Amino acid sequence: QQQVKQSPQSLIVQKGGIPIINCAYENTAFDYFPWYQQFPGKGPALLIAIRPDVSEKKEGRFTISFNKSAKQFSLHIMDSQPGDSATYFCAACVSGGGADGLTFGKGTHLIIQP
Amino acid sequence: DVKVTQSSRYLVKRTGEKVFLECVQDMDHENMFWYRQDPGLGLRLIYFSYDVKMKEKGDIPEGYSVSREKKERFSLILESASTNQTSMYLCASSILWTGGGYTFGSGTRLTVV
Image (cartoon, rainbow over all chains, first blue to last red; front, side, top):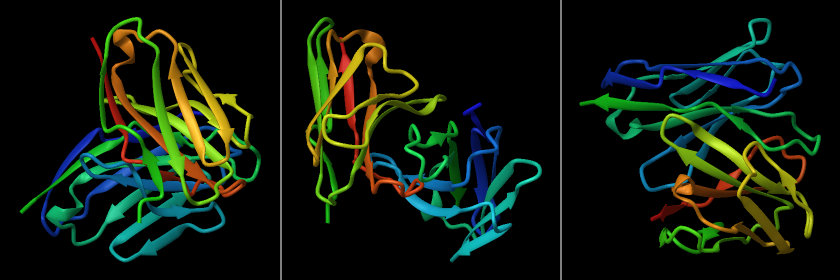
């Protein structure tokens, strides 16, 4: 199975809150899990990524939590700001194998209210 | 600092027309991809290529073809455009075997009338 399920579809959080976006996958061969951030009129840009040998990765205010046994991973945004308002995509792939590209979740439209 | 360039931001074409979407990357990446983005459906892979003249079908290749005659250029072709191909098309590139560090272009919004 190549599917990656992402939730919620949309999310509104007050400034300073911690939005959490969740993703679940089925293919146990997936070994690379990036998150992409997309602003209106722009292409997605790589935000942060994790491999399954670690359970958490932080880059600035963004944290990925990874649960290999549950086949789930999530994005947390600490001290969220209005500038974080964007669409976020989780993704997964099998690295290094000539794979058929990233499999993306359907996206979460995040709004951070001032 | 533009690395993946899509030739058009907006296109309007008529049903039945042959449409070419062009993508150029200047990072010497081996892999190139075409995705379409639709509300509620996320990003879906149309075709990808890991070398010149090589192409592989993605999840939704029907109605599309691709061409990669040079390493830096990957073209998406709609042989006979239909209204259900109205969408945002995104090109991306990556280093071979990189495990997902894709660089995307800004997209081409295609409307077929």
